[in-house]
Length: 339
Ligand code: KG4
Ligand code: ZN
Image (cartoon, rainbow, N blue to C red; front, top):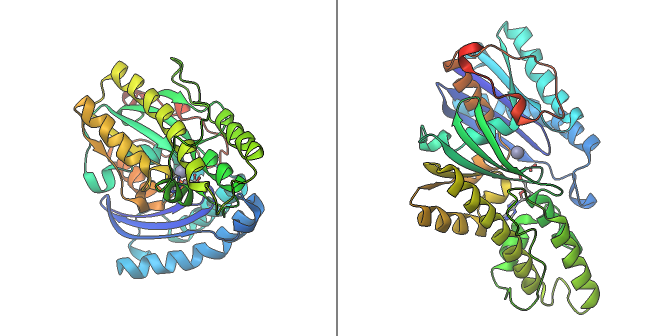
């Protein structure tokens, strides 16, 4: 079965082709128009998707050496995300369905992240614990099976990637700043600055806004700290503080739920310090830590197409195609047997 997949929920425009669940092509562009604004500008994101999707579709077909005639199913993210961006991607995909007389499958973006590690690692041992950390999401989810998810923890304020981006912005770094913060922090001494540790209580939820404010106040009290001077130290202090809190909460939920594997997903897990910390944590729990490669970790259409294929295999009915900018993951958890 050849599946053509679209992802356009935020600032990545991505198109993929999957043949029986395996990737035949993946073309992703991270939109650069947002850089001067220090954050994603929804109107610009929608316009960029409109400009990019045709080109990415042609490139994907070329990469896979296939034509539109061979496509059996088209799918796209319909939520959660930016409404204009979701409309552009999903309506583009639905237009193709009308022209090709093929079915359209609506996909939940976060659900696709949950299964993204299977793209190259094959079926994972159930249940597995996913730490989803991106610019828009910070969640721990126990995956028992397809459509059987337990949301164990979620952020009460900023997403982890958002906190990286905002702290980077305070130091004058370009948006999105996460990768640069992570890179600079490697050379820093995290003990040079003492920052609050975000909510180290027993709660399984995350909170990063206090830590971000602590960085702001520290910079105010130490005006000599600039992008050029001691930035690495304060970024290292921020990173250690944020990630030690994340690891503590992941450990708590893992000890309580006893997953058979640990999976990281989302842009913050792409190639960062978080990977090594999560690997050590999984080793101490005697379970494998599984990381999708960076191009499957960040927002991408391959994971959208892969989930569509899994839903097809499970015989789940096609869902309502309308876009849902807010679409909680727990709204999806249904009994496969009753659907
Ligand atoms: O999943 P993703 O590609 O997309 C959205 O959330 O839209 O994640 C992007 C986020 C941004 O906040 C970016 O700053 C962060 O992931 N990020 C990182 C790293 N690489 C990207 N954060 C920390 N360390 C990194 N190496
Ligand atoms: Zn995402």
